[in-house]
Image 1 (cartoon, one colour):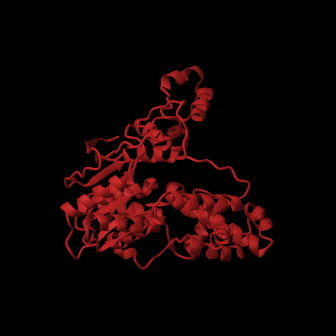
Image 2 (cartoon, one colour):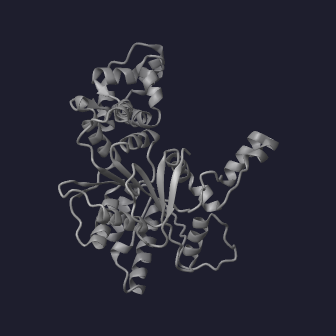
Image 3 (tube, helix red, strand yellow):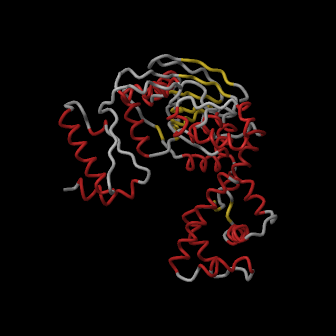
Length: 394
């Protein structure tokens, strides 16, 4: 970690954030983060004609945050909530106006572009497995869609590999197909553009029209390349990351029991010098992405504001949340209650039916409960769409 100035605000108190380039405001409570954002908007209002840019990762977050800001500020207007990709594409147009007419790689359009390339594959032995697979239109579409998604992920997480492909240092069939794709359709690689942006922002002080303030709210993960762009932009604009962190202590070094077992097999007796620890087992086993993202954020020189709120209740859920917050292991003798319920169902249809019964029971028991107080989450909500319609539309 290059270095961070850390301030602490207790409870839901709002701390004024002094102007600086790159800020990290962390809390275990989304409401506390909303308090901090509202306090910043109130204490340091932008020019009336300037938009308050708040980068989010979903439409649901933008709607919730809009209502929370309106509640705290009485009046909330002229705010925009772009997704990370859309915001960074706007930055590309502002920082590199010469590229505004060029076509960026787009995974949706690339599906059909790659399908066109399948009709004229190079007559090379390395493409024989591909030709043997492409014996039906559906297979062509499926492979093109998979390759478009892969190329999009390569551009974000493996930009150095794509650069080598474009330089011609690799001759496997994916590399050849990538070179054909960008040459035929004159596509610009997003990773290459982002590297150009970082260089331009680092060495040019005459860039105009950049936003004076950008907030990134509740985004749980950003690729390293995106963080580099935000950090470079912080030399010209105030950048605020509002990060939902379940633990107030440094937990980027903790390992799950499985990881410790694998490291023990790899290093043998030398593992003792690694100082491996689990901390909270739930956080160690299920917080891998958050752990890595926290470590990436701390690599930048930033000012950190901590606004953690201890759970106020004594139910099982609050007890577990407290253990995660303090990076501790709770008492196994805790009594269970209905704050955490696990249902094992034999099919998605049955899951939705159980969900409906539980929601109806909650509304009957809680007179103050409102639909906006409930959120239903699933790894792939589209999988449940027909079952939700069948059960809830009766």
